Length: 369
Ligand code: UDP
Image (cartoon, rainbow, N blue to C red; front, side, top):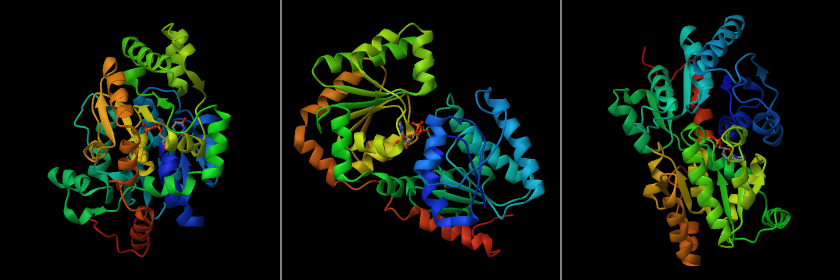
């Protein structure tokens, strides 16, 4: 099996599948985000095998990323056609993997199929739609995701509702209570008395007004005696400096991108998380913590519907939403801690590996020629 990936969330969410596959898993990393903070240390921490690393992809415009990865994947698959190609999510790496599988007639499995923001300004939305049209086995995380695929005319036989592998990723990598206590102490924060923030989407980072509005709100919250731990993505750091907004970081506790276990530990005890991340919307439902999502749209409404998250625009709405959550106090946190995650039961990777096994035996479940 070839698993084609290129970014941090793909490593996180495919890790449970890769571990179950064992030596049958061949990782191909396109290099979309290949640096120590965003990939290298995740491979080690998640216990993943060394990937085949493609060249000339990272930092390039979208079309170049897709075409450079596609050309190299095609050469790899021509040499040694895998039994199936597995891609996850909606990145340029996933799309390149899907196109390469399609070009060579190799069965394509899409993990986390059927997410839709209906926001055509997001390149990821286009990636998702194309990958789902090409996929032979679509692993939908939720029944709503399956229904969205069906509404686009995808035959029922190509879709399986598996749950999202992020649930088991969180269970496998959340550090023990004792280690979490040490990590909180090392960051100088007390459980339930700090905010955790991440921002990295272009709609927020590439618009200096949006970036300024987000950081100004976070700084105002920090001034209310609520430490704000801000794990700064390299893109955000670069944009902050380019826009001359670096001084806004002074009120926050600036952290580098964190390892997965450390990030989960800090998220597990944050009073509220503020983020524009996709994966964090799912993880907070497993950790049972409130989340303020700073985005125009989301492809994961389940987290909102289940009461874990709310969507706000950059600016005052962030502070209002955070303060509302803080006002719910311990009762609010207890309610979320006991609410089930809408994203699955922790068995998604086992279901996906079973589907892959059926492909390996030549049965190709759900394949529609
Ligand atoms: N994450 C991490 N360290 C950090 C920030 C995020 O390990 O400092 C993890 C987070 O828990 C989630 C993944 O990275 O699993 C999300 O990645 P990102 O936000 O880059 O991508 P998205 O999910 O928005 O596509």
